[in-house]
Amino acid sequence: MQLIFMGPPGAGKGTQAQLLAALWKIPHISTGDILRACVVAKTPLGEKAKAYMDAGELVPDGLLMDIVQERMNQPDAKAGWILDGFPRTVPQAAFFDTLLCDVPGGGPTSGKDCALRAVNLDVPDNVLVTRLLSRGRQDDNEQTIRRRLQVYREQTEPLIEFYRDREQLVAVDGDRSMQEVTAQLQQVLSRNS
Ligand code: AMP
Image 1: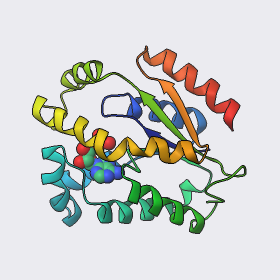
Image 2: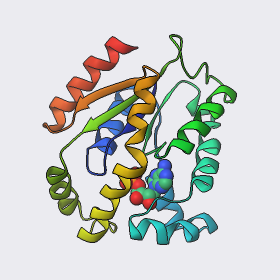
Image 3: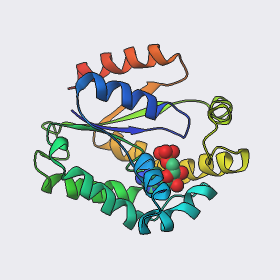
């Protein structure tokens, strides 16, 4: 299983990705978690990323590509993975395509033999803002939330078409209970795999 989780901030990507990864015994790879760990550890990458994250902006593509390349080459990523929060821009998606051809177990990146699926969790903006405000993460203040939603619409939403064109898109209504969304994802993905 090779799964990408898309959807706006607060759509439930992290929760669902974590649940399904545990169920399928494959790694849950969250670029946001990796970046937050770098910020806490004050690594050079963390120092560079912090200001972007605090402002609700995307961290530059080049930094993400290095992180993902390194993570995908770890042995536990051979059997499959769930990527949460990457790719988030069209250049990241294009880079990822090339990378998948090179990593062990990557396989074809499009066409009928391709194992990759991109899940979009759809949730209306008013629900997202309420959810994010109740989450209480450092970058979850109202101003940053509004900026992250705007960045999502401008830079990440075009990926829906990118994956739809390649017949890899799985669209799921995320405006339901956590259990209902999990059940729906399991159903749709077992049909698709
Ligand atoms: P997340 O936990 O996925 O909401 O990510 C938190 C923050 O980390 C985002 O608001 C971005 O600043 C940064 N980030 C995470 N993943 C990416 C990515 N693929 N591209 C650029 N920035 C990212």
